[in-house]
Length: 125
Image 1 (cartoon, rainbow, N blue to C red):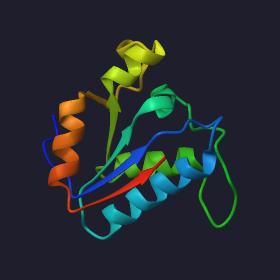
Image 2 (image 1 turned 90 degrees about the vertical axis):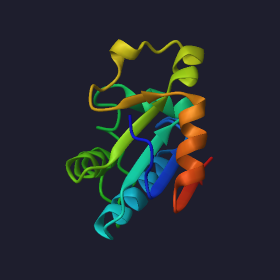
Image 3 (image 1 turned 180 degrees about the vertical axis):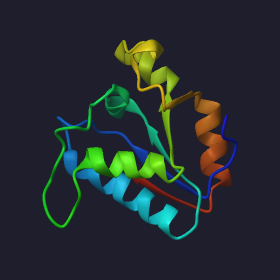
């Protein structure tokens, strides 16, 4: 389990409620990685649906932003962590076995620890 990260982006919306916030979350997290920081994106509330495989494939808000699926792949490839709130999954009826195997399920305690130890955060709600 990741115990610290320099940058935490917290995302609350899914692709049906606000694809712009999803795109911004992964764009900014990618920028943090490019600047040499460790970075994590936490999926909470409705955003846990983004933990399902291929959930970002059709999220594209247009220029100047990259499609969200590409942003996610680049983020993971460069060492970014996608973390999923377990309580939010349970509340929304999403089984851990259904989510992308590259993502890590975390608790509310983990969320607080990550936020309190991060150098910076961006919360998109």
